[in-house]
Image (spheres, rainbow, N blue to C red):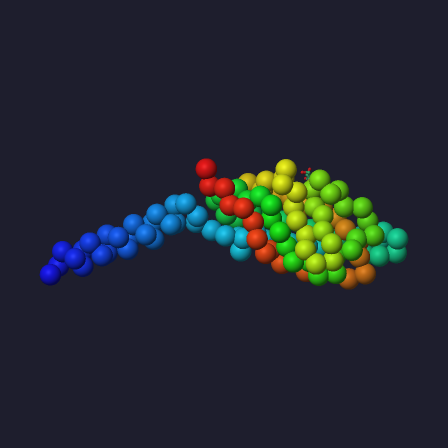
Length: 123
Ligand SMILES: *[C@@H]1O[C@H](CO)[C@@H](O)[C@H](O)[C@H]1NC(C)=O
Ligand SMILES: *[C@@H]1O[C@H](CO)[C@@H](O)[C@H](O)[C@H]1NC(C)=O
């Protein structure tokens, strides 16, 4: 009677642990911190955005919902680019555990960057 139950738990633990090993986190471990900074660009407020990866695994191709994103300040497209709907961190900019990338933009209003998807690389 006890054996099948034990087997069940063994499989259950293997499932949880195995899954945890290959993908311990997801795009929700991307933190966006943004602050209005002193400068005005073409009369509009400039914002600095710092995007940090709190996941132990590297994340690439991080995509955000960024409704209204339309910067009057040039944002280097080899770092970050987007239209008024979706934005992406360039593929060549992996964000390692605990590291961040940053950029500045200037806009009529502060844009919300909502992490939507990413590639997780745990190797
Ligand atoms: C965001 O950045 C500001 C200014 O650098 C800092 O004071 C604040 O602690 C940061 N907040 C988070 C949640 O990292
Ligand atoms: C922004 O990124 C640049 C280039 O990686 C780096 O030199 C700089 O220290 C970063 N600034 C902040 C505030 O994180």
